[in-house]
Length: 177
Length: 312
Image 1 (cartoon, rainbow over the protein chains, first blue to last red):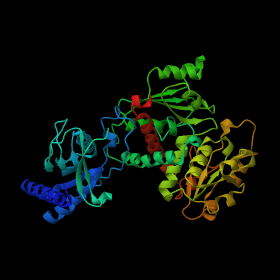
Image 2 (image 1 turned 90 degrees about the vertical axis):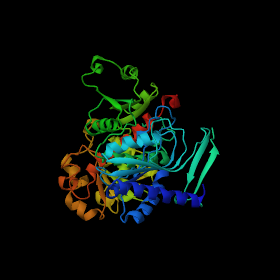
Image 3 (image 1 turned 60 degrees about the vertical axis):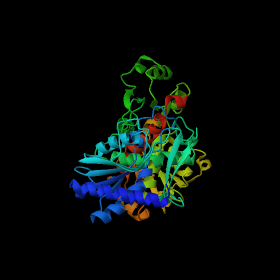
Image 4 (image 1 turned 135 degrees about the horizontal axis):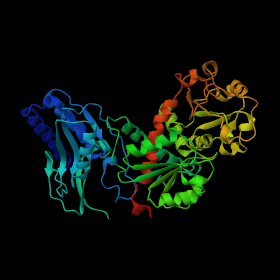
């Protein structure tokens, strides 16, 4: 995916979210949480688009799932922990949970566990830019920018300008072992 | 692992980067402590044994809370009421506790070097919670964290440690942590309480309190370690208090505006620190206690959060 395809995908995601939110009378209770690090910038972009579509700005937060991972016992070093920053109550919210890539579903599992420890949202809509298949848990995206079936020996990388890349891109490469 | 360190025994052995790794992680850990549900599952199934051969309130409860917030199981063992009173040696005690497969042993002992000795004899990570007059690394890290949080950095700051430096393990850990993070360290206290050769650790000595705190960004007040002092090193505590104690008048006239006052506790109120300073606006003593939990969470997470295979 190149830069214009990514912008189009983000706009479409925002339109679909806004449409469903209005249909389900949830536009007023929307809130966005981006999973670090890939989901944070996408969450910010979605917020800009949703603000235009809805006429108000939903609150946005950041979630770091390092302390909720299920692979501490099988990984080598302890994973790096970044900041979690959610400054609004989750009670009653329709939460847009944002990540760049949906793969095994384990990150989302950890994120859901962490969210529950912060509060009780009314519902959670999982939104990803790329759903690459290969799910290992019963977790599916409510909104996906693009759906692909990527073999397990390939990596999908989302590069965004906000992280210092020259332009937005989604790249696939053989996994370094 | 903290950088290349499997244990946390002496900040003397730690690099600036290793110290910074703990402090950076402690920022995230402090955020966890302020959540509505103060519990994360990251050390679920890990066990931590707290071995205290010496009295402690803050440090032991701080390590215990840190373990609980990270969902580790912790066992608290104190020497009173144990088989130590029946003549069991330190190594035998530790070997028996090790057979219960802890991931981290936290140990406080009145003998300098005891945690290092234990570390050489067990397979798990060892964290010193203070050994004799050697080091108290988690206190040094939390003091550095507190100063960094309040002042933004330690680089180029002047920090003054006042009191019984020669018997203080806190002072020793503070000196290493502050120095490695780029601060200038001044020591102040009675000549009988200044250790030999501290200039080699990069410190300056100033016996006059007014000069020692002049222009300092933070002042760390220490307690007289009566339990470690054999022969009396002072004439009276009243004299000590007059010359090296900090009261409201001295604090107002001598400290630069915005300077912090730290104390590792327990405070001997009225001796080294008057209540109006300990409870005053410059005091960050209770911040130190809260930050202590965050820093200890970071230490436990880095040392116990590693897989057993990666360690061996």
